[in-house]
Length: 214
Image 1 (cartoon, rainbow, N blue to C red):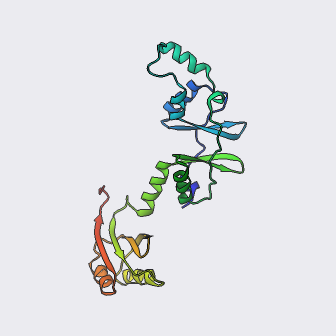
Image 2 (spheres, rainbow, N blue to C red; image 1 turned 90 degrees about the vertical axis):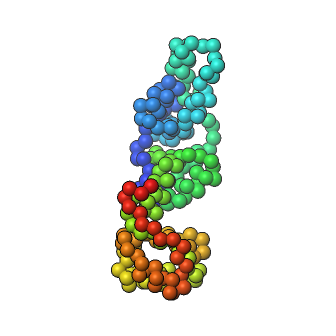
């Protein structure tokens, strides 16, 4: 699964010349938590809700709301943007690469850059959505969780048993050494499970998930 298939294309951006008040307004109006900062078509930074909160007057300030709003309307992004290396990703990278970068750098989103131009943004929520799609959690089906020997040909054996009994695989994932999670479109999987066990597989669980399952 590629980043381009799960990113938000053409994200809302802000310029270094915009004010903190502008940034707060954009976050609120678009119901987002971060704003890429773009200067003359080039990505130069990213501002998050936390960043903006850090540069705003404390709630314990003696300033009035009018004075606070005045200060925020005069303070520009270029005065507060953090001077740090930008972590970005390209649209043709795999989603798991994006997840790894976010994890390694402790960040919640990555600007997506192609040929030096910002083309999108991918967030933690997008990664979660991709995982849900990969595992078929929003689709009805019978989920098999089984252990097979960690050797060549075992996956082919499992799939051939499923097909022999009319099984229709919609999603398949391999974890660690020999742990398989397979989702079938079939509601009845009894003969499949029996045959898998006969062939030496350990079926750890079988569960039917309808559309309304959580």
